[in-house]
Amino acid sequence: MKTQILRLVAMGLSAAALPCVVGAAPFTIFGTGLGPTGLGLPAAALDPHYQVLTSGTAAIVVTNTAPYFPNNAASEWVWENADGLPINTTLRFETTFDLTGFDQTTAAISGAWGTDNNGLDILLNGHSTGITLLGSTAGNFTQLHAFTIDNPAWFVNGANTLDFDVQDVGVVAAFRAELSGTANLAEPATSVPEPSTLALLGIGLAGLGFSRRINRFRVNTGPA
Image (cartoon, rainbow, N blue to C red; front, side, top):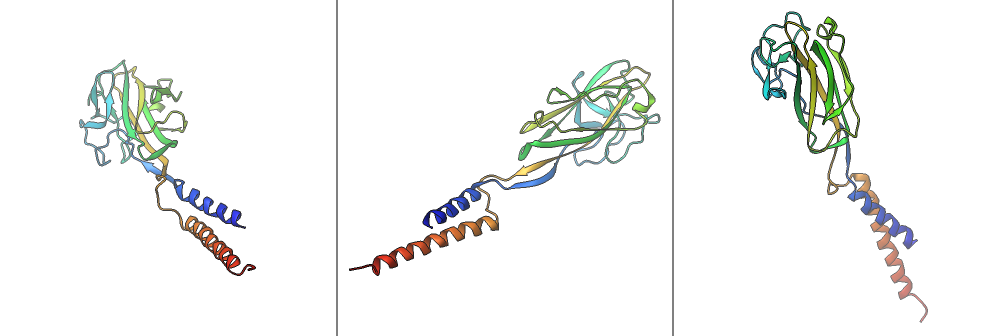
């Protein structure tokens, strides 16, 4: 019996030391054309969340969106310059997001993008996702195209990068992405145990005390 009680105590202590895993929670990741608080930017404004790596400058909200799917609260069209120039070129747009405090193996990004003209690839921390928008068709920019990135091997703890390779072959150009992300939160091992864990630990300790009292009674009432 004493062995069983000690096992209960050990189980309670072990459970108390385990991290408490919380369900999926959103992490911060911005679509194109949004300001620091997530609100849409005016035309010709610098996008603080997207860099044009090929030129080393911030992306800019384009001024003429007439041919494109209308801007909304989740994203806006951007390019290297507000007038949609340069053209007939390939640009890489990069944004970053932070998974500190999240379990990166459970992370997933849901998004939609549009390109004038071709989307060559989306890369997460340098890993090609193979997601493309090809064909130089109007459908690439008159609607947004959904995608999901959820490979657990591609996300890292801390800062992550998300790149979009876009190619223009026309007289004006633009790129757009709207994004959201979720991942599980994991509390540290020193977190407060759940009530069920405390109850298990209490039962074990109470049983251990009862066992000791029985042993003392047997010693005191034993044969002379």
